[in-house]
Image (cartoon, rainbow, N blue to C red; front, side, top):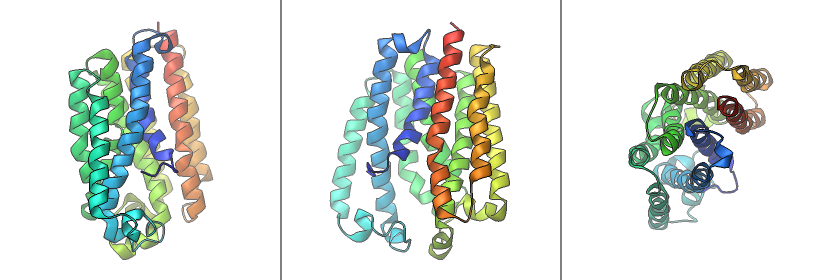
Length: 280
């Protein structure tokens, strides 16, 4: 489940918190329905990120043996059998489904719709140079689910924020993929880090700019013109900081900048909370 590396839980959870915050009528911190939803989403993020890791390790148990960073994983090293992993996965999915049925029918449908994406994602790096885009779709379903859990419906604004979050994920996961470039080439694994190559900083800048633009327009559609809208520039400045500090050929730098996206997500969440408060 990679419990010892919680960054994946944060990156799965934060879009859901965005959706809950923007979908709540009034100040979300004063409403038990919003607080309870955040607690359930946090539990769900731990469980479903863990399930995604198990699925990934089941698909990649042979590939993981060829990559230095992953050859010590339980299935690749033989510490856990396929049967044990499958039983554990089924248990996690059962707990995840129990959490999901606490929500309305639209949120339930979106959660079920995301399951095939979770299962299929590890295959994408074998068949497309854009597995990061597929991860962006999968990891950010929480934006839509969080919003519908509170609002009971979808909105064009939240759809644009979902697309913005997808662009954000393409950016940060490309940075992450730069850690494994050499091993990926040898193992035949595809990624945007390989197709962007020396122009990765330029491409990531484009996706981060698209992320900010789509999120800004989405919030504008949801909350209208608001004097606090410029607060969204704070996470945008963090995007700029990432690009300036990142050293693409340095594995430690790639990991550190990737992990810093926890701060990016939190900054967006706090900005949404301020905008929500002043829009009441």
